[in-house]
Structure formats: structure tokens, C-alpha cells
Image (cartoon, rainbow, N blue to C red; front, side, top):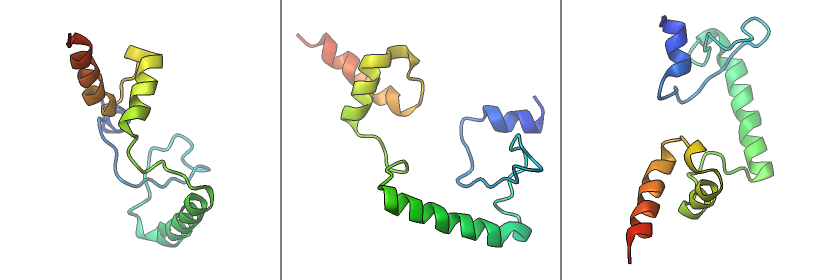
Length: 98
């Protein structure tokens, strides 16, 4: 894979991403660390913070174990995100208890 492809298949992402969707619709060139886009990035950070406060969005908080269990019970092996691994193992141990 080339460097661009590796970005899409990486196990982790950078903490912040910022793209020019008109000139980069496939979100290849992250501008978050580009000084030329600092002001626009700051404006978007403020808009996001306001939206999170207004809506009570919990997207940055970890999912509760009970929430993960509910999703696992419904979707099983389709749950592939790493946060399900520990809960899945715990549920397997519990199912083996007499």
C-alpha cells in the first residue's frame, strides 16, 4: 500500500482532522496542523464545542459496559471495534459459569 492508502487502513487515527472538502473531497490531506488554516480550524472547534454543549452529545465519552453489552447481544460478531473485545470476553466467561 502507498502512504495515502495506509491512512485509511490504519488501526488508529490522528486526534484531529480538518479538510478542504471542495479541493480535497476524499479527505486525503489533513490540514489540522497547517498554520495557513489555523483560523478556520479554530472557528470550527468553537462551532463543534457549541454544538456539543447545545445537544449534550456524548460522542467523546466511552460507551458504558451495559451499552456495549446491548449492542453485542443484538449484533454479535458484527461488532468489530476494539472496545467490544473486553466485554465480549467477560460475557463468554460469564456464560461458562455454572
